[in-house]
Length: 74
Image (cartoon, rainbow, N blue to C red; front, top):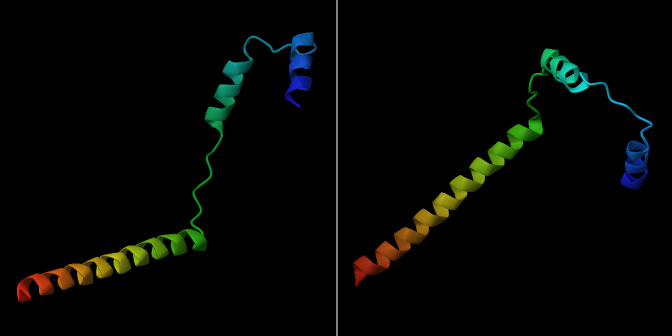
């Protein structure tokens, strides 16, 4: 695919005007940017991340409590 494109560009069949990049960038600057849409899947991903973090911290707390219990009994 890129070989054919390279051949066309090297053959000189396409000529880009001098002000093409400047006009293109000006046009891009004038385009309205779409607002970010919040999907349900995004919310569910964050809830899963928070839930996993909470469960991980609970496991860590129970592990540390077990170590503290054993060390305090001795």
